[in-house]
Image 1 (cartoon, one colour):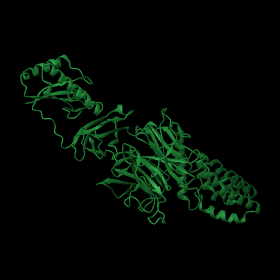
Image 2 (image 1 turned 180 degrees about the vertical axis):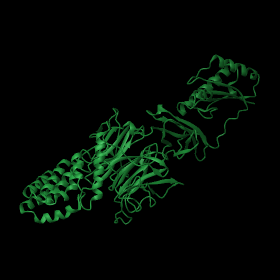
Image 3 (image 1 turned 45 degrees about the vertical axis):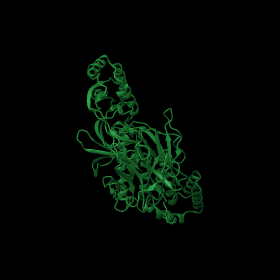
Image 4 (image 1 turned 120 degrees about the horizontal axis):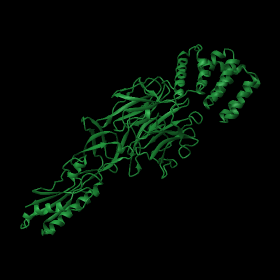
Length: 631
């Protein structure tokens, strides 16, 4: 964030001394301007302060105050004009006003003029700041010569208002946008907007109690399945209700569309200081957040905690490669779990707070951050970023179109050279194969099918047995699903490019641990079916006739017709299809004069495949009816 109050230490003393020495009329205009400013009548305040300068051209305090006001109002060109006049009209002005002049010129994008000022010697005790401005000028010159071509759009009145809208968070399916709105400069609450039938956005609606309260709630992170919400709540009170606390991290979940009462993360994560701006990795194992706790490198730093053994572990600082003596805020880890975006006012950039990208090197190391360039970053404040799951569209918050701190949310097509590895999201639910009851808290373990490396771990939602998770495209994955009182099962997933546009729907059926598969005393024949077919071919009828003729004289047998399918389609539809096929074979046996009393028909759906379901050849083997005879 930009620090506006007092550009330079020397100006404090100049302001105080000149305040007392100013002529009466100039002092009158100055006091009038201060009253207008306190009443938030900015234009009248600016005008009165201009008159104070006109009445006393050497009134250093008026120059300093008016320049700062223009700077805060994002009127950088006017601010630079004021400071330039001060360098001319004030004794030692070239020395005392050089820094604010150079800074204002940079923010006004008058880089050549700023570099001309910066070519001079650094003001006393400002050598470090002077060097930082020179680095900023060089970066701005290069960035603006090579701008990003994609256009950045303000999202308009259905999302943005005269208040500040910040911290956009797009859901995994791209259909819901969550964000923070600050009203009256104080109260912060969460809002949600959904995509309408024409592809636009409905007006944002506040999230209900107990998520939004009289306290300040801000900077939310929503899990991929939209069931879990992590956020920052400020102005927390002690149990006695009197002692004010800092900002802490909270978590809530939703079941049956009702949000739970938010719970604090506790002392492992939260301190008496600032903890906020959470970000959860797509595998739910890492929590990134911002804190000013001891042990950091500057104002606010980015920290990370791992979820191990059922608990969030002691956080660790991301280190000096990411964190600086300034402020690093709004961490956002893309769904590939390899690309970290954040905002910083400590790394070299366009000025103010800029957006950066870093790549994971290993479990504890990140690459040096890369500034995302112009015009993603501007001399204004860009404070947060979020991408769609395909990495092709971005949402960011910036105050580029209004006064400092009055943020809006913008969207843009994300430049191809900045796009991370694309991912898709897989959604479905876990259910009991027999009762069809949804099963919550089922564990889903995902590993790389080629290397066996364990990658992710998820659980089905505690409310409705659903799950949503993201996986990078172009890989084959092995899955193991287990749950208490149910049989573990294994499956595979192949995430190819067809799922870049649409999600993969993948429902998981589990058999109770006491389920006993029908006994196969004598497997007489397996009848195969074409995809979605419920017809017996002539060759299949001939095979049934040949296999069963020798059993016709016997009446002391029991014949099981067990139908199975591949894993295409829905579980319920597959069970119905497998039953129809088994019933078709039973009808054929009845036509051969087998008594219907000894025929037992079952449709087991996709349970018990005899081959994997990865290829059409394998799925052909699973679309079958088994004729089993028990004597």
